[in-house]
Image (spheres, rainbow, N blue to C red):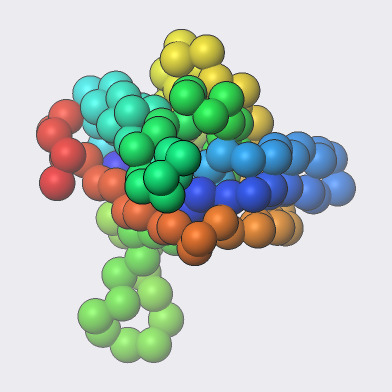
Length: 150
């Protein structure tokens, strides 16, 4: 599982069916690979919630999302598993099949909510517009395999 974490001042997602937005917090781009598991979900949710990516009174990255009462906008992003070594068109054989990936994506969002964080989402498998006001900018990539952060 691969997740791009962007610290944001605000973020929103729209398509013809939804409109969700958050203020200060994280915009997550969530990629589910064909070998992703539920243990990856647990370890990455815990890692992201506890990540100290917000500044304290001294300007140091010492605060986590709970400490600043932040929110999360979680967007499914199968293209994080794009294969680009050969040719000019990316391949996606390392991404999990959509029907299985949706199950893990939903479980990941539920796992984040267990930490008493407001979690908004996009609509899985659709074309969406994501608007992000990146704060910093701070962008961190988290990846897990077999329940271990790599």
